[in-house]
Amino acid sequence: MVQDLLKRVWVFAGATYLSAILSLLPATPGAANGLSVPADVIAIYESDTVLVDAYPWPGMTLRVVVQLASLDVPRSPGLCQTESKLAADARRFTEREIGSLISLNGVRDGNDAGSVKANITTQSGKDLAQLLTGANFARPHDGGETLGWCP
Image: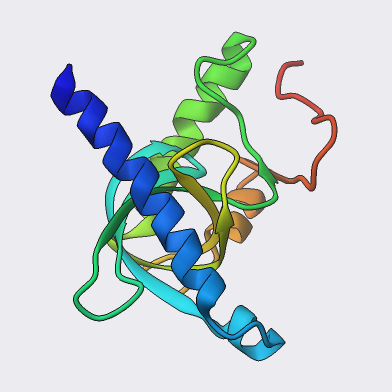
């Protein structure tokens, strides 16, 4: 139990630290849009949520939960059997597509303690949000009510 608590504190501290580090970088549009943080995928929680070891500076590693920005995906467990099945299929899709080394772009504070939101570029150089949307496993979402995934 103590080890689990320490892991949660470390993940929270890592996410907070990563956001703080990135906020210190120049705030010009080119720097903000061009910054890419390499990261190793440690675990995939849902189709849009991964645990990574991020490398914002040489010699520095931060373990952090990353959620794709501006996306609505089916959740598990779902509100119905259809959503649960879609969530499982979407997670498997992400596992196949993401690769082990990714890039994080547009990193900012997440909704939950210990997480950040970011755009994720897969190991093959593709935008994960676009892949999920193209496969009908996600919808663009900028806040407000979602359409839901149940018939």
